[in-house]
Length: 171
Image (cartoon, rainbow, N blue to C red; front, side):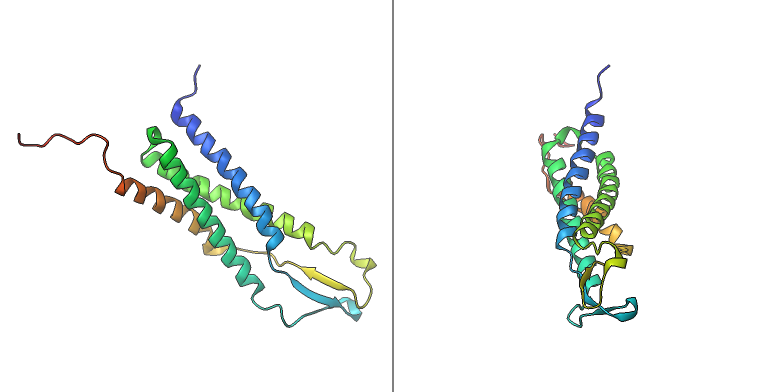
């Protein structure tokens, strides 16, 4: 029993997208800005004053990276698979962009946590330098990747000329 071409293409798009988003998400997690501070008495951490906009930079880079990847995956699918063009693939690319953005965030969070691990907090002593990455809740940022995937795919369909000109109604 052969797998239909459309199903195989859709599965391939999902697999490649998840792999690419996860790899870029790991890199993003390593590059995310972090709060740095000094361990003080009483178990408190005194945050350096230069650590402004850590959350905003993380959010902005998440939105930009997932949006850019969604456009790349969407345009690549449109160009490389003309047999599967249509509304079904448009909706599939939107769904794949959502799942891929989720994998991007999860892998990025793990890699950031591994890079900025403080270890056992009981072994910290006063004056130790720490760095930590705050959690990220993208909120409306989740909608950017599927929107840009759909927009890029739809615009590609809009500007692509037909391969065969249709017959004129009056001859």
